[in-house]
Length: 328
Image (tube, rainbow, N blue to C red):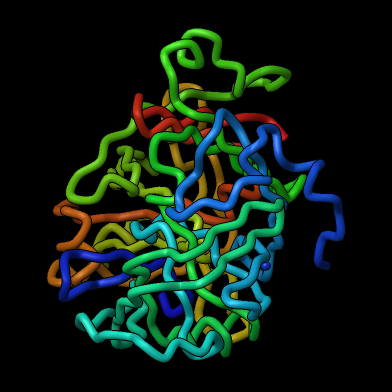
């Protein structure tokens, strides 16, 4: 699963798990915070939207750091609010804090920065004098996805907000999680709800998990915008079983010559069964750092990413542990 880029952290010694849109920032901001310069890289206000750029199978938010323009990968599997690519953005006062690696195996050193002078985002949000901001050399994102990747935006940026993802309109919208909003559910206005999934989290709060079935094979499934097309890790015995039944089919290779598979009739709940066409597959590695980081003990693990998110709009309500599946 070489394309699974998502980055996530555990403590100091970390394990980490795209056309442009030329539109007025006023179109995307539903509150007044876009005119306010903030000193903490975190959302404020009631609701706000961001235009997305999709490169291959990954979502990006355009912006700049200290005058260097580029794109941040929007990665729900990345816990930190922001992490800057020091291979593009010159950072002269970094302090090393440990090592890290992605879910697909790229390794790097991690740093912290006392001050980041300015960060601007495409919808007009501005941040100045950010303290203790992480950075690392993310040249693998430049080389493998987009040459102007200036870092990650992750879960802590929108902690306390409900997230709506629309890959067709290329839009992210965030709604502040409140008691009034939980009652009104205005984030569903005008939407057709296909299914509502109740999820759990384990070791990391930014990884929603549900149990799914394919034929008679059970899997634990996670949701991750940084998970490339999506991926499947399963035992050889279960893979052979599903192949014989026509539920797991060789789909050919991607542009990097990695094998892709189609996984059919994935039952997510009684209301929703989906097909995932063109995801990565590997044999179960019970000793993998990703499994340890997420607390996965099940034999089979499935990641819902681009192949699923391009089929449905989704709303992720972390506070109430629900994901709403909406019709495009």
